[in-house]
Length: 100
Image 1 (cartoon, rainbow, N blue to C red):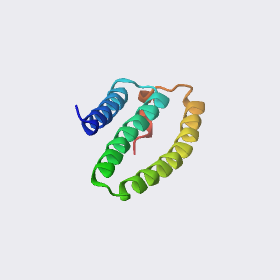
Image 2: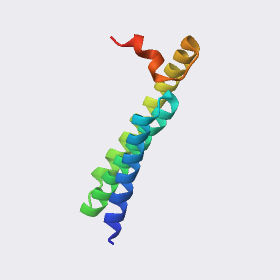
Image 3: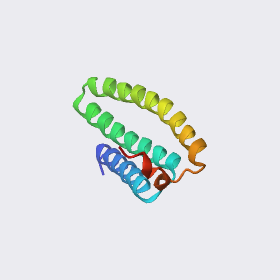
Image 4: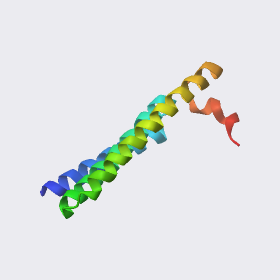
């Protein structure tokens, strides 16, 4: 098995595991972690393709995605903590009244 195929298989497995976690689990923090796992799977495939093509643009894009993901988590965690303080639960179903 080729190295590229192994890395793409790993990235698919990471994405599938994260997607399964988002679908199955209802805990908001676990859902956020699973979304980050999905993002890391996509980043791994992007780096793999960039390395295979010999382009540095893919690595630069992954760095940009990591910066945006860090900002997203820095905003999402305080929002989740404020919601937990209000509802006293991490269950996603308890926040159905927030739909616009």
